[in-house]
Image 1 (cartoon, helix red, strand yellow):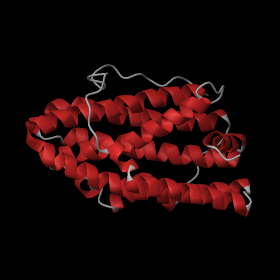
Image 2 (cartoon, rainbow, N blue to C red):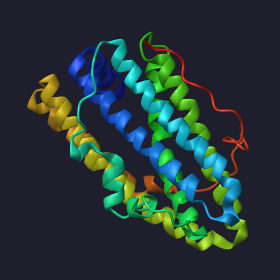
Image 3 (spheres, helix red, strand yellow):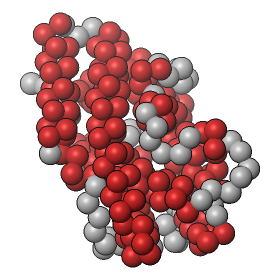
Length: 262
């Protein structure tokens, strides 16, 4: 029977598949760390109070990247290059979602509009990350090899999502509500397409490594496309709603360092 649990278990059981999975995850987290670090450095004066939280967000993403590298080292594995079609952050940037890297490579301060765009984009992508980590925690939170890493990353992703909700609601009260709604909708609709494309690419690579029979690969492809159809119809709405989180000031405290996995 095909399920998220059985698929991830297959990946865990195969060194090459696990190596690719951790490499893709580490690369995406490192990219997120760099982006948040640059945004924190370029925050405009009127939003400087946000800079420490954005920097904390970036530090968390960097930490996640190190965790995935540590999981590889624990098995004696080296990371592999990330196939282009599986690079989630790069594909989002190509669709014009988030802040362009040409802007982040410069030294010109961002505008308040840029900060709104960044937070709205992050609210969408952090929803995806939190959902995925919740699923992994449900099935593998107690796994002896990866459970501790999954629980730590899942905790951080919930904090990131809470922070996005809270700051966007603050900015909406300050008069940015219309812009926030527009950017959220644009980001969500683009993200679900990118997530579909990346999922198909990852499953194709995993299928090759794990020698999946054609019927299994086809079933997984159809499942990914069915999820996209649902998200395009209605599922995207969960990514654009805003509500005050129970945990306020989620990125205002002291970050938790990663444990040793090697």
